[in-house]
Length: 192
Image 1 (cartoon, rainbow, N blue to C red):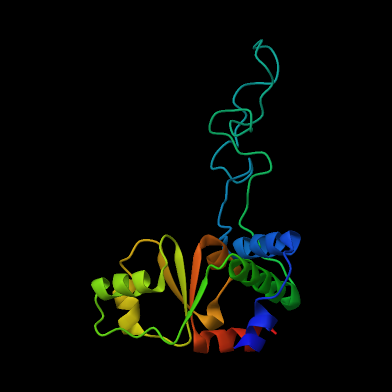
Image 2 (image 1 turned 60 degrees about the vertical axis):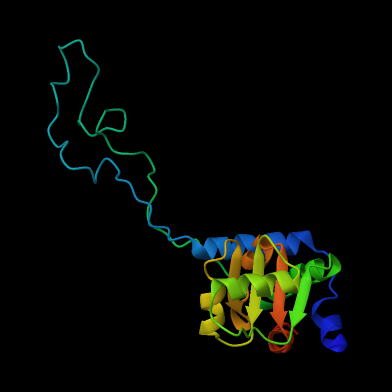
């Protein structure tokens, strides 16, 4: 366990890497479905509203000009993909850096397993109290445990994730990290 701790909990703080990885993660989450119409896409506007000369009014060729009410939008947003590539080494480093920071702050608890006598919220609260954690808690499990999930899912601020799906966003959102021993082994295999 000490060797594993050295490998994944022993990185120096690297704010630019953490920032870039978080930015990458959030860009992946964007749906990018925003859309508006240009003057050519807005329905109508084909007829010239009034003649070119002689009215004293400004020239107008369409009722869908961007200057007009109900007109099109100049350079409107169109659906697009915001995701971009970030090297795996950078992503892994960022997770190790945040894990190391939590470890340095003594905000990581390692338990044998997430097993409870009953899958009740009361038991989940007792488990957290015994672990000495409160507030925003990220629980990293080695494998799916539906009974444990049921016991803690109604507790505010508690999130359960699998070790193989741990991400930078969840890590940065949490104040405490509670990990199963098996999850630490899986993380070490994934992050080294």
